[in-house]
Structures are given as structure tokens and as C-alpha cells.
Image 1 (spheres, rainbow, N blue to C red):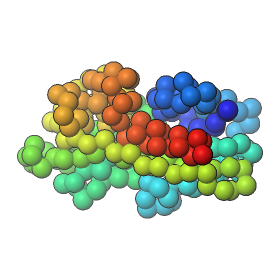
Image 2: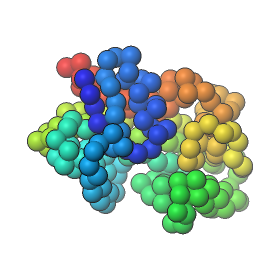
Image 3: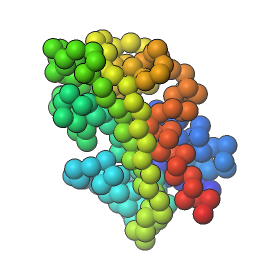
Image 4: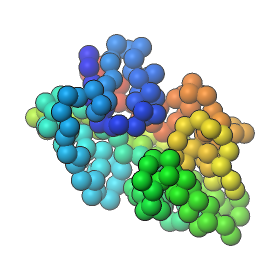
Length: 200
């Protein structure tokens, strides 16, 4: 079975492939398509809403069963920010690396006076799978709990990974191996849950 994952983020593709590959599900990204398609506007105010918009939009445009996710960081001391705006929190940067660095710097600035015991946060991932006729095949959601550290630590992963210190593990998300992260992460949890829609 082939499944189009509506992302060009290689890290997300690798995570999904490591989980779904052993089940006989081949995950391909947008870069595997011969044509380019206009990205659906993500204007929903929830992760679930944006995942639906992307999954249905790309499924209808490509004629393929499509999985899409929307994920981000929710920080309690910031009333849930950056939330659905996680990727564009700082609003600057031309490349993913530049945007990640700017987002992390802004997050640390906003939390500068917040003590460690009030820096609880979590990664959230909502996944939607849709067929070309617009039918939603399945939806799922996962979370990855932790606290925001005072400085980036680790080189694995991307985005806010170096800042989220994982609950029950004395390391940041960016210090975890891919196996460790897939077993605990928000995306790993959401992907494992979405498997049930294929099994049915």
C-alpha cells in the first residue's frame, strides 16, 4: 500500500516511514510527485482543522490517499502559544534552519522570567488521512510532554526539539535517538493510532 504524506519535511517522512514501513505501508512525500500542487491554506485555529485541510486538499488535487499532519508546540505559560503558529512564530527566516533558530530564540526570550517549574509544555500532532473523493478515512492525535529548558541542547530532530526536555527522560527531544523518539513522541503516537484506520 502506498500512502502520500503531504509534507516536504524529511524528518517527518523518516519518522512516518520507520513506523509504517514494517507494516507494508510505503510512505512517499510530496517530492515524489511529478507535478507540483498548490499548498492548501492552513487557516484553521486548531491542529486538527489544519490537518483536515491539508489531507483533503492534497488528496483531491493528486488523486491519491493522503495523510497530513499539523503539529506544534503548546506552552502553558504562554497560554498555549506558539500553537498552530509554531512554524512561523517569529515570522522571520528564509530557510527552515533560519526559521527554527528565530523561533527558538523568541521562545526563550518570552520565557526568560518564567521559573523552571512553570515551563510545562508539549508537542501536539494531529493526523488526518483522506481519500481523493474527500472522505476522511481516519484521524488521530498525539502529545509529547515536557518542560522548556533554558537553552537548546542536542542535535537530533528539528524545530523546538532542542528546547523540550522530555518528561521522565533526562534529555531533550533533540538528544533522543530516532527509536527513542518514535516510541514516545507526539507524531509517533499519532501515527500508531492512525494505523487502526488501515487495519479496519
